[in-house]
Structure formats: structure tokens, C-alpha cells
Image (tube, rainbow over all chains, first blue to last red; front, side, top):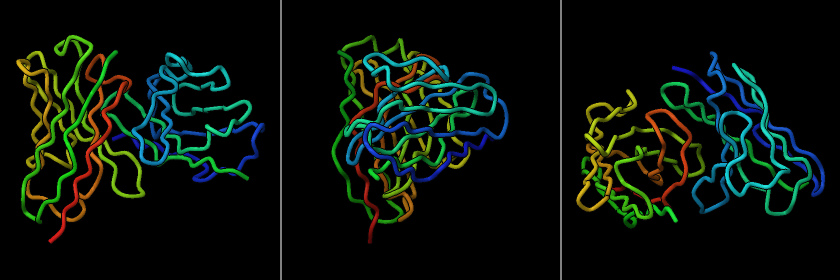
Length: 106
Length: 119
């Protein structure tokens, strides 16, 4: 079973600043890694798949990088609508999610 | 537009069984796989299992083996998630979500269905 660990648990950022979220896999998942955004009361929304490919309609300020066991989601300039919880998800085999990173207003 | 519309909230007693539906539209039902993911209040996402609607084959997370049944009805283009022997820890929002293969990104997702287990 692959365990996904996200850090930090909470990230306090001011609007307009850059946010960097990390996700680590307990063993290699190649590039089979997705990122989702979830706002209160809503279902998760796909942001990134294949570690670095933006999903349809996702703004360019969201970018993903990494492969193997270390992954990063970067939001280049936080907008008010970006404050949410972000989850990574490996689908190399048995799907597993990270515990989430809450991005809150500083 | 691809849409997944789930059934409504449920309240169940411990030991009961719940069955949630996920009605799809906007794509060929048998071309994609349907996953179920749950989220306990204030907690993260937990993958439960997946079904291939074309032949009904399923894969379940080990944690739910023996209690979980995922099915797909091609005549109504609806997927179902049935969880038995409910306990308070099963209180959660249950989501259906599509993928292009057994293990792939999940997109889109249903709106979720809250299941509350309480005596």
C-alpha cells in the first residue's frame, strides 16, 4: 500500500503571493499523480494530472511538477477563489490520497 | 456536458445497509470506470472501490472487503454503492467519480451524498 504524505497541513498565504504545496509517496508512483481542489460543501475538482498537466479550464497560475516520490503543486499568485483544501492522489496502482493541505488567508 | 448526479442524504441505524446511486449523462456509460470515494466530516478523501460498467468487474479497497458492493446498471446508466453493517465511523459524504481506466485521474465527480449513521 502506497502512503501519500502532504505538507504542510496548513499554509497561510497573502493574496497575490506564491504557494508551494508538497506531496510525497512512500514508493514511486512514476508520474501517475493528480491534484484536486476542494472548497467547503463542494466535491473535489481536478486541477492537475500526470503530475504536471493542467486539466481543462484550469488557470495557468496552477502548475505541477515532480515524478517518482516527490511532487509539488505551485500556485503562482493566489487569488481569493484559491483558498481551499488541496489533495494529491496517486493512481499508479491502488488509489491513495494525501491528507490534504489547507491554504488559508494570512 | 458530462454530469454525475447522486441520490440524496440518508440516515441509517448502526448495522443497517445503505445504497447510493450515481446517475450519469453526457457520455457513454460503458466507456469509463466509476469510482467511489468517501470523506468523513472534517477529514480527507478515502478511496473505496471501482467498477467497470461494461462487465461489472470490481476492485475494492481491502478495508471494505466483505461490506462493500459496487454495481452498474447499463440500462439506466446508473452506478450504485452499497455498504452494509454500518457503524458510526461510516458517517461521511460519499462521492462517485469517473476515470478512463482502472487506475487513473478522477474527473468529474458527483455532488456527494451524506450518510449519517446514528442510533
